[in-house]
Image 1 (cartoon, rainbow, N blue to C red):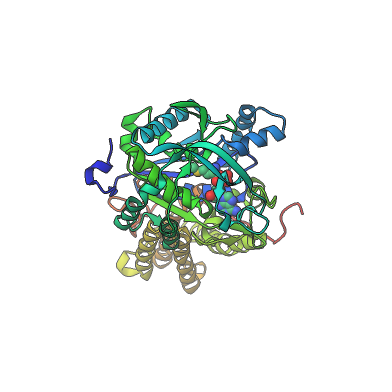
Image 2: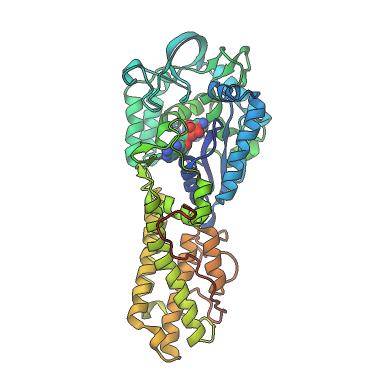
Length: 527
Ligand code: ME8
């Protein structure tokens, strides 16, 4: 169904379905911490939305066509298909290790994608937005994009990859992007939250206001791509092919009912390097094909190493799975979500990772859990007591504020604020324990109420931290005797959810185990 027709102005509806995507990654090399960062953040959004009760569909995948991939295969003496089959499996494996909960993994060499791309292209062609022309320009193969001469660095180098671009002349089909300027501007005006954070929205508007040029969307110089349906001498330009993956995966061209259900409830998470493609080209392509543009595009900054972008071409990548082996998968996830302000660049250091781990996980949360389990063991025979009623403890009001802030933080695409707020509750609870010193008290109602509060805080924190640390949060639930998982669908729903104060089940068996987050010294293990 074409939802754009309902309003005629591409206004988006507020659906219950929540379709989260990551970029599809080029298979010219291994996944690194930069691509892992995007994927972990998208995963946390998907997990949060499942927990609040939304119907989530979470997609990631690999971008397998184009000159860059054809050359990567050639350099290794492999056929492109053989190469992409191997390289895409590295991403599947890495994401599985990092606990990425994707519902689907799309590869652009799949038959379903060929069907969708050809149908999408044909729709745009039939609607009169594609024409034939000649193109000459500076092309960066790693970006798979043309550059204006004015945007190049000295020596005709790409501003992102800092290596020389190539002069390419082609006869191609063009997409009439320039005809979408007004429609894009009014779409932005009607949908103030469509690009987050606001700084990235302004950047996207800047691209449009600079003036939009038509884009060449087919190639003839090589054939590693999807054939253009009306002219088989051409293959579809890799970016045009890649963007359509978001429609393919929810049934465009193959399953119209699923597509009508999930589109346009799509939330794209991308790095700032590909904002223009997602916030300008892609909505215009959707409009041209007669479908609604996406509901939201969230763009994050770069992870830097020593002040430089971490990237395949700079060979300064950090391998995320090695880091996860060293510090723990969920500690790494927590650090990426907590210490990078989404939208800004973040400098990655091993010292920063360990410092955050020790402060928040070992000292604060880990210590709270360990202390509470020990004292419930010694003062309450291992049986969890009930918390104070909300009127009887200031912690209940703190919990209400924290839950509210966490909800708002996820809505404004600020996971760092959601986790910071959650840890405020941990801090307050530790301070309350220091004050009451239940380990010095006699067994009885007074000690029970203090420990009941602490168990309730641990229950709430497990739910709120579960998008970052699903398995650790589950282990906390297990140790405080709560049944099920903290991230069960709907657990954090506003209506009938369990984020209010006082849901901890008195009478649960509390168990003490090994510390969840043993304190770390600064050296990577094995060094
Ligand atoms: O651009 N810091 O794929 P790609 C943070 N195939 N994020 C980083 C990063 C860093 N240092 N380096 C990479 C492509 N990323 C296209 C996308 S989508 C239809 C097609 C992340 O393998 C970030 O999300 O070059 C960036 O946008 C993406 O990886 C680029 O991945």
